[in-house]
Length: 88
Image (cartoon, rainbow, N blue to C red; front, top):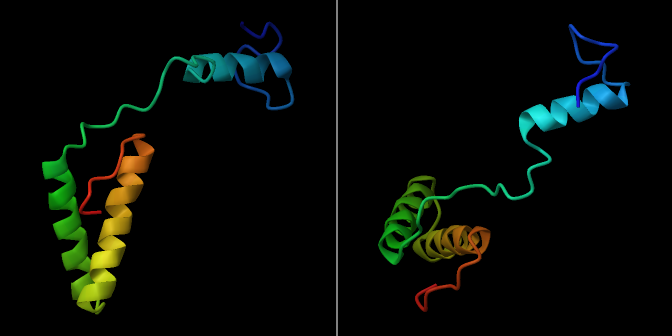
């Protein structure tokens, strides 16, 4: 759809302009999903280690850092609709 009234700019109040903008941005393409890198157990363990070290450097104790790092890895699994590994 192309707005025939506003040719040089998008008018937020114009339904045709909004539709044209959404089509241009690909918002109407429901088949597109965000592409995430493969999240293997090896990558998960590396992420866990890196995040835990960051929390330790920030002053968290080891138990707290481990819990927060596991939460970050679980969140990454959830984003990708993956089951959690037993060590999480």
